[in-house]
Length: 496
Image 1 (cartoon, rainbow, N blue to C red):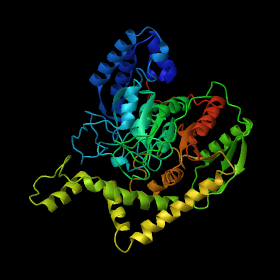
Image 2: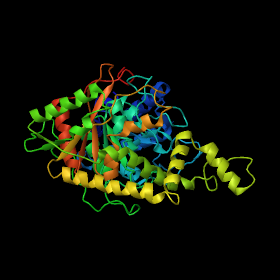
Image 3: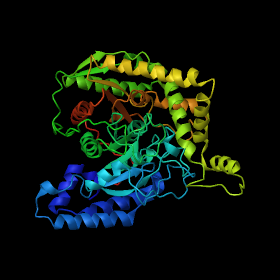
Image 4: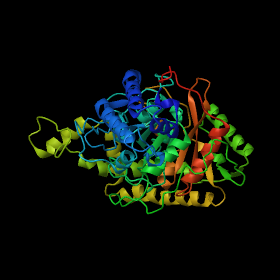
C-alpha cells in the first residue's frame, strides 16, 4: 500500500479503522522519497526518524481511543512534504540557497503548526528555486528538480520539488509558496492540482519572504478535494501575521461529491485575448476543450476583458524585485547563515558573503529591485507599477461582475527542457504570464490537469476567482475532475 493509492479521507479512514497504520503509510512514503530522490532530486532533507517517531505516536493515540471516528484528527497519519522556504522547527530551511548555511529555525510556521495539530506527518523538505525565484527549479543551489514525466525536463518552479513529490506519489499533499505562480505553474507541468489562495487567507508567518505583498503559502494535491480539505485546516486569522484576514473559514469540501456537480447558473469568463500569440497550440486546444466540458455541464461561458493583463509581467518583475531587494537585505552573514571567510572589514564581509552566498538569479533580481527603488527611478518604475497594479485589480473586479470564475491556461507551454531557457531570463519570465496576475490582484487561483501533450507531458488549466471565492473554484474544478478524471501516471512514480 502506498499513499498515492487513496485520497486523504480514505487513507485516514483506513488508518483510524485499523485496516492499516500510520506507521505503514508513513514508512511507505519515506521509502518512496528515498528511492525516487536520486532520479528526481525533489527533496533536500528526508526526515525518516522524525516521521516514523511521529507516526508511531499517532498510532498509539488512535489505539487509546474508544473507536469514535469523530475524534480522529483530519490528517491523522497523512504524510506531507514541505517546501524548503517554510520554517519547521529543527529541520533545515535553506530556501534552496547556500547563504542560509545550516540554518535550522527554532520555531514552526503557522501553517506547519496547524498541519501538525491535524495529525499530519512531515516527511521532509522539498527542493526549490533559490528564495523561490524561478520558473523551472534550475536556480536551486543544490541542483535542479527533474520532472517525473520526463527527467530531461523541468518540473516548473519555484515549488518544483513539492509538485514532483506529489506527482510521483511520494506524498498525497505538499505545501509550496506562490509569489507569481510558483504553485500553479509546477502543478500544471507535473500533472497535479495546485492552489494559490486569496492573499490573507493563509498566514505567512514562518514563510521566508520573497515579495511580501505577493507571497502566499499554496497547496499541491492529487485532486481538488484533498487540496480543499487542507486549505480548511491551515487557513484563518493569525496574530503573528497582520495581513491575514478575519474572514470565516468555510467547509471547503462541502458539496464536493463523487458526482459531477450541476453547474447550471455558473458563469465562466473567457478572456479571448489571452489565447493568442505565444500560446502553444496543444495547450490552447486542451484548455478550449475544457471550456466545452463546462458548457456540457451546464455552465454559461461569457467573454470577459482584462485590458491591463498585457502589462502584468513588466509590473510583476518591478514590484517583486523591489520587495526582494528589501527582504533579502537581512542576509548579510552578520547574524546567521553563511559568512564569507578572509574578510577582515565589515563592509567587505557583507559584500563577499552576498557575492558568494547568492546565486545568479537572486543577484539579478536584487539588482533590478535596488535600481527601481533608487532615487530618480522610484516614481518612474515602482510607483508606476503600483498604479498599473491597481488598474489590474479593477479589471478583475469588473470581470467578476459578469462571471464566477475566469479560465486561462496555467502555463503557455508544457514542461520545457532543462537548460532550454537558462540563458534567456526574459523567455523564462514570460512563462509566468498567466499566473502573475492573480498575485498582483491578490485573488485566488487553482490549476487543474486537463490532459497530455503529444509528448505525454501534462497540460493544466487555471481558474481565477474573486476574493474569498475558493469554494466556487473548488466546485468548478471538482466538477471538471468528475467529468474528465486525469488518471495518467508519470513514468517515475511509486506505482512503477
